Amino acid sequence: MKTIGLIGGMSWESSAVYYRILNREIARRLGGLHSARCVMLSVDFAEIAALQEADAWDQAGRLLAADARRIEAAGAKLLLLCANTMHRVADAVQAAISIPLLHLADATGASVRQAGMTTVGLLGTRYTMEQDFYRGRLEERHGLRVLTPGERDRALVHRVIYEQLARGVLDDGSRTELRRMIAELADRGAEGVILGCTELPLLLPDPERESPVLLFDTTRIHAEAAVEAALSP
Picture 1 (cartoon, one colour):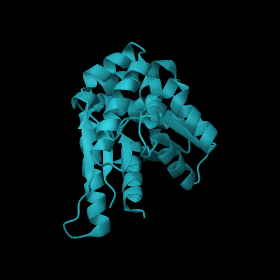
Picture 2: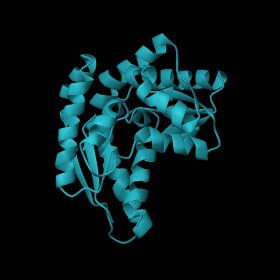
Picture 3: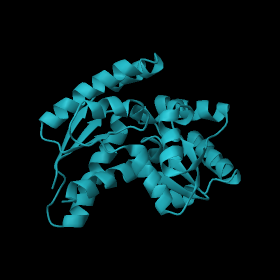
Picture 4: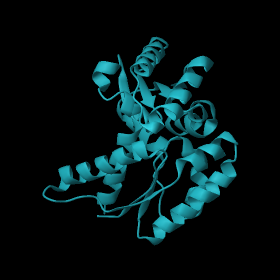
């Protein structure tokens, strides 16, 4: 079994879910007392969020690249960035290490295509929904048509993520708003909806009840892809 490296803490609420999924999936596949070999470096998310807000992506990339080198030095054979938004600096992180970075958008795009879909909705931070590093990768590398909510709803999702979910707050009113956005994306032609922030599944724990279309939980997709890579020859 290869050692999985994780840059977490973005936020720690979803990084804890990563850890749980990795270990449960390894136990499911291997049985007995097996658990995942992993190394996690958890960042101070306040520092990362401030760099995001300041549009200081190069500085954020250097910070995470340094953390990635520490994780590789600790013995990791593959790396996860436990946040959709911070894949904005994925190239800088990959350039700093010799082990592969498992790109979250690629794992998600493959999952969507495996489900036979070509048009999906995307919910996440405003960076993920509005900038090209994520939705553009889904479109160009995976041939997907990606729909996002209108400007007002994009701002609402962003606030829910940073002001509630990253702080462990699960608000019923916000859950209702997310359900509405998912239904509206489906009405516009989305065959499924990507929960493109690793905290969003915390608010929608019962996908079949929450949505008229399939929801793609990027936290689970990413963690399960890591298990597959860790167990491959």
